Length: 275
Ligand code: ARG
Image (cartoon, rainbow, N blue to C red; front, top):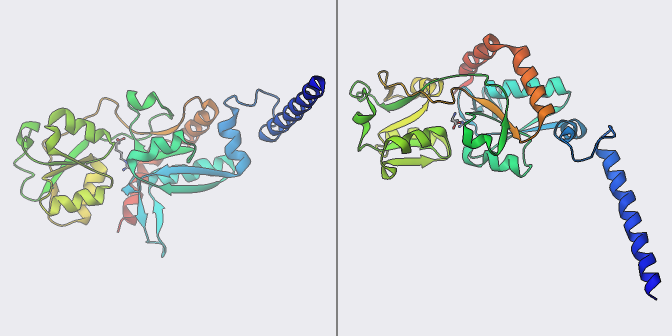
Protein backbone atom coordinates (compact mmCIF):
# COMPACT_ATOMS: atom_id res chain seq x y z
CA UNK A 1 0.00 0.00 0.00
CA UNK A 2 2.58 2.48 1.17
CA UNK A 3 5.04 1.58 -1.53
CA UNK A 4 2.44 2.17 -4.25
CA UNK A 5 1.94 5.73 -2.96
CA UNK A 6 5.67 6.20 -3.00
CA UNK A 7 5.80 4.88 -6.58
CA UNK A 8 3.02 7.24 -7.61
CA UNK A 9 4.83 10.10 -5.98
CA UNK A 10 8.00 9.24 -7.81
CA UNK A 11 6.05 9.08 -11.07
CA UNK A 12 4.49 12.50 -10.44
CA UNK A 13 7.82 14.01 -9.54
CA UNK A 14 9.51 12.70 -12.65
CA UNK A 15 6.73 13.92 -14.93
CA UNK A 16 7.04 17.33 -13.28
CA UNK A 17 10.79 17.28 -13.77
CA UNK A 18 10.41 16.47 -17.46
CA UNK A 19 7.79 19.20 -17.84
CA UNK A 20 10.02 21.76 -16.15
CA UNK A 21 12.88 20.64 -18.34
CA UNK A 22 10.77 21.15 -21.47
CA UNK A 23 9.62 24.59 -20.40
CA UNK A 24 13.25 25.47 -19.82
CA UNK A 25 14.12 24.36 -23.38
CA UNK A 26 11.30 26.36 -24.87
CA UNK A 27 12.30 29.54 -23.12
CA UNK A 28 15.93 29.65 -23.83
CA UNK A 29 17.96 28.24 -26.63
CA UNK A 30 21.05 28.31 -24.50
CA UNK A 31 21.79 25.66 -21.94
CA UNK A 32 22.05 28.15 -19.12
CA UNK A 33 20.04 28.18 -15.93
CA UNK A 34 16.53 29.01 -17.03
CA UNK A 35 16.03 31.82 -14.58
CA UNK A 36 19.19 33.79 -15.31
CA UNK A 37 18.90 37.28 -16.78
CA UNK A 38 19.06 35.90 -20.32
CA UNK A 39 15.31 35.93 -19.95
CA UNK A 40 14.57 39.67 -20.29
CA UNK A 41 16.06 40.06 -23.74
CA UNK A 42 15.37 36.51 -24.92
CA UNK A 43 11.76 36.72 -23.75
CA UNK A 44 11.24 39.89 -25.80
CA UNK A 45 12.77 38.23 -28.85
CA UNK A 46 10.77 35.06 -28.28
CA UNK A 47 7.45 36.91 -28.18
CA UNK A 48 8.54 39.08 -31.10
CA UNK A 49 7.37 42.19 -29.34
CA UNK A 50 8.79 44.92 -27.14
CA UNK A 51 6.13 46.26 -24.77
CA UNK A 52 6.89 49.75 -23.61
CA UNK A 53 5.13 51.72 -20.87
CA UNK A 54 4.82 55.49 -21.06
CA UNK A 55 2.77 58.44 -19.84
CA UNK A 56 1.89 60.15 -23.09
CA UNK A 57 1.30 63.63 -21.75
CA UNK A 58 4.81 65.00 -22.03
CA UNK A 59 5.67 66.53 -25.41
CA UNK A 60 8.26 66.38 -26.92
CA UNK A 61 9.12 63.18 -24.97
CA UNK A 62 5.79 61.38 -25.59
CA UNK A 63 2.30 62.55 -26.43
CA UNK A 64 -0.81 61.76 -28.41
CA UNK A 65 -0.97 63.14 -31.93
CA UNK A 66 -3.38 62.61 -34.78
CA UNK A 67 -1.17 64.47 -37.23
CA UNK A 68 -1.00 61.27 -39.30
CA UNK A 69 -4.80 61.02 -39.47
CA UNK A 70 -5.21 58.63 -36.55
CA UNK A 71 -4.46 58.99 -32.87
CA UNK A 72 -0.95 57.77 -32.14
CA UNK A 73 1.55 58.01 -29.34
CA UNK A 74 4.61 59.81 -30.70
CA UNK A 75 7.62 61.72 -29.39
CA UNK A 76 11.36 61.25 -29.28
CA UNK A 77 11.15 58.60 -26.54
CA UNK A 78 8.92 56.61 -28.86
CA UNK A 79 11.38 57.17 -31.72
CA UNK A 80 14.12 55.65 -29.55
CA UNK A 81 11.84 52.74 -28.58
CA UNK A 82 11.10 52.16 -32.27
CA UNK A 83 14.81 52.11 -33.06
CA UNK A 84 15.42 49.59 -30.25
CA UNK A 85 12.60 47.36 -31.51
CA UNK A 86 14.11 47.54 -34.98
CA UNK A 87 17.57 46.70 -33.64
CA UNK A 88 16.10 43.68 -31.83
CA UNK A 89 14.02 42.66 -34.84
CA UNK A 90 10.72 42.81 -32.94
CA UNK A 91 7.48 44.81 -33.07
CA UNK A 92 6.80 47.72 -30.73
CA UNK A 93 3.73 48.04 -28.54
CA UNK A 94 3.23 51.21 -26.49
CA UNK A 95 1.02 51.26 -23.39
CA UNK A 96 -0.15 54.62 -22.07
CA UNK A 97 -0.70 54.90 -18.32
CA UNK A 98 -0.35 57.25 -15.36
CA UNK A 99 3.28 58.20 -14.77
CA UNK A 100 2.85 57.09 -11.19
CA UNK A 101 2.04 53.51 -12.25
CA UNK A 102 4.93 52.94 -14.66
CA UNK A 103 7.45 51.31 -12.34
CA UNK A 104 4.71 49.14 -10.83
CA UNK A 105 3.79 47.99 -14.35
CA UNK A 106 7.45 47.13 -14.91
CA UNK A 107 7.62 45.21 -11.67
CA UNK A 108 4.52 43.20 -12.47
CA UNK A 109 5.73 42.37 -16.00
CA UNK A 110 2.98 44.37 -17.72
CA UNK A 111 5.69 46.20 -19.66
CA UNK A 112 9.25 45.30 -20.61
CA UNK A 113 10.63 48.82 -20.40
CA UNK A 114 9.62 52.33 -19.46
CA UNK A 115 10.24 55.18 -21.92
CA UNK A 116 8.83 58.19 -20.14
CA UNK A 117 11.44 60.91 -19.77
CA UNK A 118 12.17 59.27 -16.46
CA UNK A 119 14.90 60.61 -14.22
CA UNK A 120 17.02 57.79 -12.74
CA UNK A 121 16.87 58.81 -9.09
CA UNK A 122 18.59 56.79 -6.38
CA UNK A 123 15.19 55.82 -5.02
CA UNK A 124 13.99 54.48 -8.37
CA UNK A 125 17.27 52.65 -8.87
CA UNK A 126 16.37 50.46 -5.89
CA UNK A 127 13.57 48.93 -7.95
CA UNK A 128 14.69 49.25 -11.54
CA UNK A 129 17.74 49.32 -13.79
CA UNK A 130 18.33 52.34 -16.00
CA UNK A 131 20.00 52.87 -19.35
CA UNK A 132 22.59 55.58 -19.87
CA UNK A 133 21.18 59.10 -19.72
CA UNK A 134 20.06 60.12 -23.21
CA UNK A 135 18.71 63.63 -22.68
CA UNK A 136 19.16 66.40 -20.14
CA UNK A 137 17.01 69.38 -19.30
CA UNK A 138 16.42 71.79 -16.44
CA UNK A 139 13.00 72.36 -14.90
CA UNK A 140 10.91 75.54 -15.06
CA UNK A 141 7.72 76.91 -13.64
CA UNK A 142 4.84 77.71 -15.97
CA UNK A 143 2.59 80.49 -14.63
CA UNK A 144 -0.26 82.70 -15.90
CA UNK A 145 0.98 85.43 -18.25
CA UNK A 146 2.01 88.47 -16.28
CA UNK A 147 3.25 86.46 -13.30
CA UNK A 148 6.43 85.31 -15.03
CA UNK A 149 8.28 88.55 -14.26
CA UNK A 150 7.22 88.58 -10.60
CA UNK A 151 9.09 85.41 -9.64
CA UNK A 152 12.83 85.15 -9.22
CA UNK A 153 13.15 82.72 -6.30
CA UNK A 154 11.32 79.84 -4.65
CA UNK A 155 10.35 82.32 -1.92
CA UNK A 156 8.25 84.28 -4.41
CA UNK A 157 6.13 81.16 -4.84
CA UNK A 158 5.58 80.51 -1.13
CA UNK A 159 1.90 80.37 -0.26
CA UNK A 160 0.97 79.80 -3.91
CA UNK A 161 -0.47 76.53 -5.22
CA UNK A 162 2.08 74.47 -7.10
CA UNK A 163 0.89 71.87 -9.63
CA UNK A 164 3.03 68.81 -10.36
CA UNK A 165 2.69 65.39 -11.93
CA UNK A 166 1.98 62.62 -9.44
CA UNK A 167 5.04 60.48 -8.78
CA UNK A 168 7.40 62.78 -10.68
CA UNK A 169 10.63 64.26 -9.37
CA UNK A 170 8.95 67.66 -9.76
CA UNK A 171 6.52 66.52 -7.07
CA UNK A 172 9.50 65.78 -4.82
CA UNK A 173 11.12 69.14 -5.60
CA UNK A 174 7.84 70.94 -4.81
CA UNK A 175 7.34 69.07 -1.56
CA UNK A 176 10.92 69.84 -0.51
CA UNK A 177 10.38 73.56 -1.07
CA UNK A 178 6.74 74.24 -0.24
CA UNK A 179 4.08 73.24 2.27
CA UNK A 180 2.58 69.87 1.35
CA UNK A 181 -0.88 71.52 1.46
CA UNK A 182 0.22 73.89 -1.33
CA UNK A 183 1.33 71.11 -3.66
CA UNK A 184 -1.31 69.67 -5.96
CA UNK A 185 -0.41 66.40 -7.73
CA UNK A 186 -2.32 65.17 -10.77
CA UNK A 187 -1.76 62.27 -13.15
CA UNK A 188 -1.52 64.17 -16.40
CA UNK A 189 0.16 67.44 -17.43
CA UNK A 190 -2.73 68.79 -19.58
CA UNK A 191 -4.97 68.70 -16.48
CA UNK A 192 -2.38 70.75 -14.61
CA UNK A 193 -2.28 73.31 -17.43
CA UNK A 194 -6.07 73.52 -17.29
CA UNK A 195 -5.93 74.05 -13.53
CA UNK A 196 -3.37 76.81 -14.07
CA UNK A 197 -5.62 78.58 -16.57
CA UNK A 198 -8.60 78.19 -14.21
CA UNK A 199 -6.73 79.62 -11.20
CA UNK A 200 -6.79 76.30 -9.36
CA UNK A 201 -3.00 76.22 -9.23
CA UNK A 202 -0.62 79.17 -9.65
CA UNK A 203 2.44 77.46 -11.10
CA UNK A 204 3.24 74.14 -12.78
CA UNK A 205 6.74 72.65 -12.64
CA UNK A 206 7.98 70.59 -15.59
CA UNK A 207 11.08 69.95 -17.71
CA UNK A 208 11.95 72.98 -19.86
CA UNK A 209 11.13 71.50 -23.30
CA UNK A 210 7.73 70.47 -21.94
CA UNK A 211 7.16 73.93 -20.48
CA UNK A 212 8.14 75.54 -23.78
CA UNK A 213 5.81 73.50 -25.94
CA UNK A 214 2.88 73.95 -23.55
CA UNK A 215 3.39 77.72 -23.52
CA UNK A 216 3.58 77.75 -27.30
CA UNK A 217 0.34 75.79 -27.68
CA UNK A 218 -1.70 77.49 -24.95
CA UNK A 219 -2.57 81.15 -24.67
CA UNK A 220 -2.36 83.02 -21.35
CA UNK A 221 0.57 81.13 -19.82
CA UNK A 222 4.30 81.85 -19.69
CA UNK A 223 7.60 80.45 -18.39
CA UNK A 224 9.38 81.96 -15.40
CA UNK A 225 12.78 82.75 -16.90
CA UNK A 226 14.68 83.78 -13.80
CA UNK A 227 14.12 80.68 -11.71
CA UNK A 228 15.85 77.60 -13.08
CA UNK A 229 15.43 74.38 -11.10
CA UNK A 230 18.20 71.83 -11.54
CA UNK A 231 17.93 68.24 -10.39
CA UNK A 232 20.89 66.35 -8.96
CA UNK A 233 20.14 63.26 -11.08
CA UNK A 234 20.47 65.39 -14.23
CA UNK A 235 18.74 63.88 -17.22
CA UNK A 236 16.48 61.04 -18.21
CA UNK A 237 16.98 57.34 -18.92
CA UNK A 238 15.05 54.23 -19.85
CA UNK A 239 13.93 51.93 -17.05
CA UNK A 240 13.87 48.14 -17.12
CA UNK A 241 13.55 45.42 -14.54
CA UNK A 242 16.44 45.01 -12.17
CA UNK A 243 19.21 42.64 -13.27
CA UNK A 244 18.60 42.81 -17.00
CA UNK A 245 22.19 43.31 -18.16
CA UNK A 246 21.60 42.12 -21.73
CA UNK A 247 18.61 44.36 -22.22
CA UNK A 248 20.57 47.23 -20.75
CA UNK A 249 23.42 46.63 -23.21
CA UNK A 250 20.93 46.52 -26.07
CA UNK A 251 19.31 49.85 -25.20
CA UNK A 252 22.66 51.50 -24.46
CA UNK A 253 23.85 50.39 -27.90
CA UNK A 254 20.77 51.83 -29.54
CA UNK A 255 21.31 55.13 -27.68
CA UNK A 256 25.01 55.17 -28.59
CA UNK A 257 24.36 54.40 -32.25
CA UNK A 258 21.75 57.14 -32.51
CA UNK A 259 24.11 59.61 -30.83
CA UNK A 260 23.31 62.68 -28.77
CA UNK A 261 22.99 65.07 -31.74
CA UNK A 262 20.46 62.85 -33.44
CA UNK A 263 18.45 62.41 -30.23
CA UNK A 264 18.45 66.19 -29.63
CA UNK A 265 17.27 66.66 -33.21
CA UNK A 266 14.52 64.04 -32.73
CA UNK A 267 13.36 66.00 -29.65
CA UNK A 268 13.15 69.19 -31.75
CA UNK A 269 11.41 67.46 -34.64
CA UNK A 270 8.76 65.94 -32.34
CA UNK A 271 7.47 69.44 -31.61
CA UNK A 272 6.05 69.68 -35.12
CA UNK A 273 3.59 66.89 -34.27
CA UNK A 274 2.14 68.64 -31.21
CA UNK A 275 -1.41 69.76 -31.87
N1 ARG B 1 11.62 63.58 -15.43
C1 ARG B 1 10.57 63.63 -14.48
C2 ARG B 1 10.59 62.38 -13.61
O1 ARG B 1 11.25 61.44 -13.92
C3 ARG B 1 9.19 63.78 -15.10
C4 ARG B 1 8.86 62.81 -16.14
C5 ARG B 1 7.44 62.88 -16.60
N2 ARG B 1 7.22 62.05 -17.74
C6 ARG B 1 6.06 61.89 -18.39
N3 ARG B 1 6.04 61.10 -19.42
N4 ARG B 1 4.99 62.50 -17.98
O2 ARG B 1 9.96 62.30 -12.60
